[in-house]
Length: 250
Ligand SMILES: Nc1ncnc2c1ncn2[C@@H]1O[C@H](COP(=O)(O)OP(=O)(O)OP(=O)(O)O)[C@@H](O)[C@H]1O
Image (cartoon, rainbow, N blue to C red; front, side, top):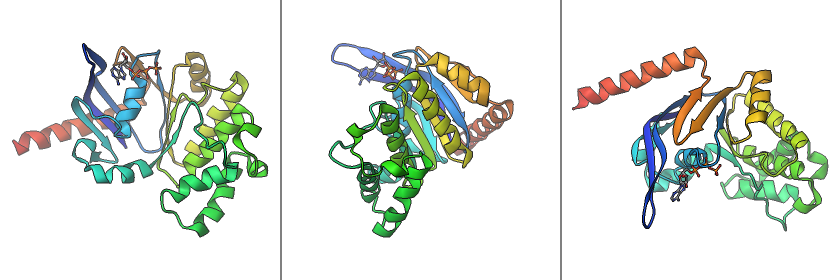
């Protein structure tokens, strides 16, 4: 589902070069729940930007659902992004719109019919336990509730992947656990979940309870990956097959 093959990313600045990722190899299967853990500057945001095609790798290849993003045309990028739902640290809700409107608005911009919107918004809000707060404005909700609205918004168009970028960065520790458990529930309906965070303690607590996979980035490299051995084996076989194809093409 998400494949990084020998991916490096270097940012050119006006007087310097910053190596954000260096020869990263990561394979995430459909239906997995993965934490990407790392300190500030480890390369987590760059990893997410490459998945969403906000940045391109300097070297290597990124595949989403088998599609090579280095070969994807610009005009196809919106279709790629529609396969994903993104949750941000700062919620990014529109303050003048109600909870209902925030979720409906996000669906409208992806050209979903009004009929479907009317059915799906209440459903998405019920999944996050906020159906009784549909008419509130974002600032009439707690931080944890605002993040749940953002999760409902990310889910409403039926994505295959949910990506969360420091989703608990702006909420209190008790609520953080709730939000993470919400991602667990989402993953149970076979949506791939990738959560990027620097909160080591929270991740280790959750991974011990739910047996989640944890990929730790440090200085732009994979420092550890608790991938299930079967996933690791399948991935190695896939990379070997792809190398053979490329060799045969030459
Ligand atoms: N646009 C950019 N131009 C130059 N250097 C950049 C740019 N974006 C990121 N970097 C550098 O790349 C490295 C990795 O940054 P990245 O934002 O991916 O890390 P991060 O793990 O998400 O950090 P944080 O948790 O602080 O957001 C850092 O050294 C950073 O300074």
